[in-house]
Length: 146
Image (cartoon, rainbow, N blue to C red; front, side, top):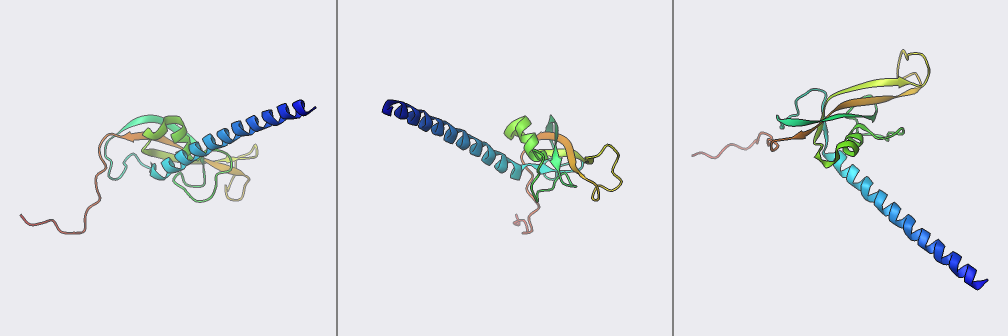
């Protein structure tokens, strides 16, 4: 009987170690996504201020609030736009351009006013990678005289 209990305890401890490793790995992934989300710029148009040249990585779609570049609150349904782009293209994503947003109603009929109907917002854009160094913002200090 003691042998059986010892075997069960050993298996239980080994299982806990595997769960701890999985939790640790998930936490590391979430930390990487959070850090990347802070760096990814989201713009409505095709131009990213300070970064005139980029290469297109591809389309990204995610859940959002009523604006693609929203950062407040928690998206319940799944990945936000920045996180979806990061999961798809990794840390090469610097920005998402040409963004759009639309309302998805929970019902079969079209919503007249998204704020009064049940549903959620989705957004999409084009993930890009900058090919040039970021242009520094204009300095307020005068240039030194030659």
